[in-house]
Amino acid sequence: MKLEPGATHLEVMLRPRERGTARILRIWFRWSGPFGLLYRQIEENPGLSVPILPNFRRAAQEAQLAIGSAAQDFGFRPDRDHGQGSEFASMREYAVGMDPRSIDWKRSARMRSLLSKEYEAERNHHVVLAFDTGHLMAERIGGLSRLDHMVNTGLGLAYSALKGGDRIGLFAFDSQVRSLVKPLGGMTAFNHIQLHLAAIENSKDETNYTLGMTRLSESLSRRTLVIVFTDFVDTTTAELMRENLGRLATHHFVLFVALKDPFLGTIADGEINSIKDISRSVTATELLKERRLLFTRLRRQGVLCLEPEHAQLVGEVISQYRTIISRELV
Image (cartoon, rainbow, N blue to C red; front, side):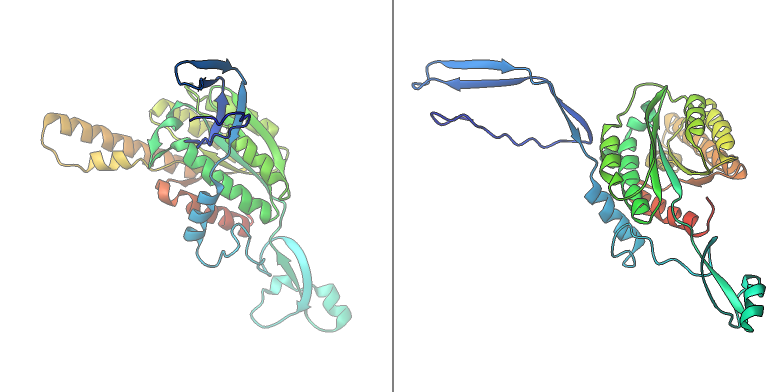
């Protein structure tokens, strides 16, 4: 690129390839003399760090497609269902078909007609998005790493929850705690959440579930919906994860989210043409069996499990969140 004589300003467009923190450590400038025989080159060291925000537009589009036309305003919780929930809303005249347990007998006696209490779903729930940033989450599926799929889903869910009146917190961990954001409320918190999600990066370390879940439990001051985005391979890691999630589920509602591995199913059910194919198929089948066994044990401990494909991840997680909130499980 050539600069015009006397020019002192130059704009260069940079397109980030992925979410994270872009670090511009060095910039080289080179320009030639008027006859093109000589050139001059200088080097600057700006040391810039620019946060690359998660792709919220993509997450919003995927959620809208999954949830359907009812969610015209993405993230907005549908009108509260009167008669459900635990928070008192209003009084109304009792009608046939209503739950007799909702009758307020004292007020009915004063008004000389049957009056029923109406309830609505409580707002201001605490929701914490816990991201495993260990080395397993760096595997790429569908063009993105597992962690990036999870972060995009968390961003869409955060927007939906904040707009619905709940409070969102973040937690990232591997061999140590990488990020901890206490639950925040209001749409003004969305930018704060987005910046923290941009800073979450993969680590080469093994995930320490005992440390992570212990620190997370210590930071929670009330019953919370904890959504754990993670994955596992070996049985030792799976057992440690199950024990710690089980302890967390005794005081909080835990939703366990892991992406379905598209390669395991393909290998397990693939054609057998050699001894090597038999060995690969048996190994893949055993890994799938271990995953199903872990999910069964987690459900027995009160942990809700999801294992969607990456294309359905955003929609399934947000749909499950809405179901949990509407049923007052937190």
